[in-house]
Structures are given as C-alpha cells and as structure tokens.
Length: 436
Image 1 (cartoon, rainbow, N blue to C red):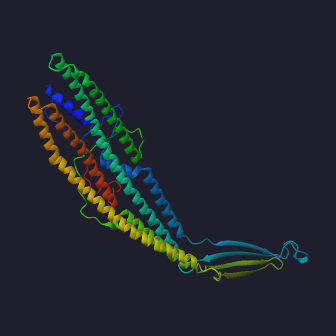
Image 2 (image 1 turned 180 degrees about the vertical axis):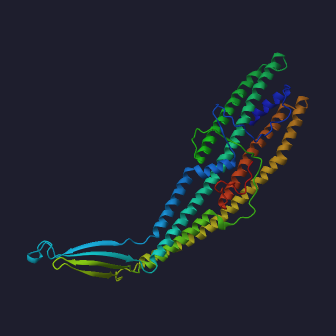
Image 3 (image 1 turned 120 degrees about the horizontal axis):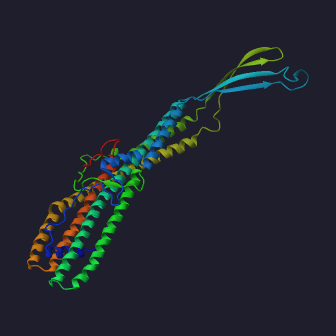
C-alpha cells in the first residue's frame, strides 16, 4: 500500500480520537504461533546454524566426499598383492610326452616391489587429495553459513512485517468505524466513506502479501536447514542487536585461499609422483618345480625389471610441472580476489552499520517527534491534512528503511565472516555475531 495511504489512515484515526498517541513500535520478538494452527518450531540463529551444519544436504554430501577421500588415502598405503602362478610344461605330446607322464609342473609366487619411494609418494598424493576435499567442504560450509544467516534474517524480518501488516489492517478497520461515526453525526461528508473503501481493500492485500512473503521465507530457511518445506519455523531473535566488524581480518584463513593452497600442494605431489614413474618396479619370484617323469622336485627363482628405453614419462613430468605452475598462479589470483572481497565486505558492513545506527538513534526518533507534534497540531486545527500525511509518510519510510538495513547488517557480517573462514563450528556458536 502506498505510504500516503497509511498516513491518511493514521491521520483520520488520530483526528477521530482513537487511542493511537504514539507511533507503532518496532517489535523485534515473535511468538511461536502459526497462523494456520499448526505446531511451530522456534529457532534462534544458533539453532538454525547448528541444524544447517548437521542436516543441510549439500554439506552432508561434502562430508561423504571427505569420508571417501579418507578411505582412498588409507587404501593408497597398501602393499601390492603377490601373484600366484601355476605352470605346466611338456604335457599332451607324443610318445614319452604323452599325457602328463613327462610333464613339468611349477608353482611360483611373484611379488612386485615399488622402488624409489613410489609407495610413500602415492600416500603423500592421497593425503594431498584428502586435504583438497576437506577445504572444499570448508568452502561449502562457509557458503551454507551465509545462506543460513540470510534466510534466517529474512524470515525474522518477514515475521515483523506480517505483524505490522496485521496491525495496520486492524487500524484501518477502526478508522472506518470512526469515519462512519463522524458521517452519522454530520462532522464529515459522505464522500469520505467512499474514499475509504479502497484503503480497506489495500490493507487486506498488504496483509495477504506479507503472509505470502512469510511463507516463502519459511520455505527458504527450511530448504537450507534440510527440513521439510511444510515445516512451520518461527525465527526468534532481535534485528536491532547489530553485529560488530571482526577485530582481525587475515586473508590467509579465507576458505578460497585454503583451497587454493591445498590444490597447489596436490599438484606438487603429482609432479613428484610423475618423476618417480620413470623408476621401474622390481619383480621377484620363487617357486618349486616337479618333474613327473622322475618324481624329483627343485626350486626355481626369477627376477624381472622393465627397461625404460622408450618411455621415461618425460611428457608426464612436463604436464605435471605445468599444472603446478597453474595452481601457483591461481593461488596468487585467489589471494588478490579474496583480499578485495574482504575489503569490500568490510566496507559494506561498516557503511550499513553507520546507516542503521543513524536511523535507529537519530532519524527515526526525530521523525517520531515530528509526527507527534504535527498530529497534535492537526487535531488542534493548526496543520492541514497534507502536513500530517507528509510526516506520516516520512515516518513510514524510515521504518521500512530501518528494517531493510538491519537485515543488510546481519547479512553483511555473515558474508564477511564467511570470506574470513569464521563459520559455525559443529555444535558451537557463530563467530563475530551476537545472537539473542
């Protein structure tokens, strides 16, 4: 509904003598009661962050990847299995070699040995790959942290907006009753009743829009928390308790930087492994041979070693070296990007905090005092309806602006904390964030 419409309603209500001497106070608390009568689940911000850390599907998938990578790292430490070979020679021939009479049977056990520290390097590469997926999980956790805070604060603001819209509808109805009473006594023209009808319709539409926005906000938070979309979540908190900028801001702990560093270490391990691939593996074999013709047995032994005449994996080493250089350049790029993003997020948070505090401490109180003074003068006949509407429009606009900037403060703080890698630990509280 246009701001002037609400201003007109407030002015007519006050002139009719309805008890509305002070503007509507911004109430930052909500009751866990769902309008449809279903059981509601009240959550604080810490509750929501804890739920997101345990039940978010995307984060659960990232944890599964970490578990798989840990299993791969453990598997990489295994020795190569030995090989059991059975050979039969000199059978199914002619004369003395007919059947198995002159056969020679050999039972041999072969074992391949990795030379040059290949097994240790394979384990190092697996550990580096594990470190990469852990940092990927941390990056996803930082993103989920931001999404949770943003969805929670949006729901908290939607709850307050829905309450304000409901109060405004009740106010509109009382104004209608006052207008009709003044028409019945001849103090107001009949046209005022006609002009009032669209205002009541707009108040109902505004209430319905606020209710719909509240439903959407609940569904958005439920999706982040891994809950059913029909869950009746009630956010409990105080938007006017503003966060403070972090005291220290280091790009070294940023999730993007940690991931880039882990990727560089993985590429370095791949290069070391590529260099070792030119070292051939040694295979030793030992066994026993039986001569059927004489019934004698004897031991057999052997050794085999590939000759690196044609393939020394030089191209593979060159490719691994190029990939290592790529990760180094990407790490430097991520460092610059993270520093820029952190500085931008810090400036956004500080600017938003400054604006919000000015609204809370200076602009809004001044607008309330101005409205009260003009309202008193309007009832005394010193001011006209236009002055009252202008004062009410300014007050309404400042309230809406304050609600938006309060949400922006909390989201900006969460974004900065996510960029710095300061997200919610398992079962803990969010860093650099005040939650009631």
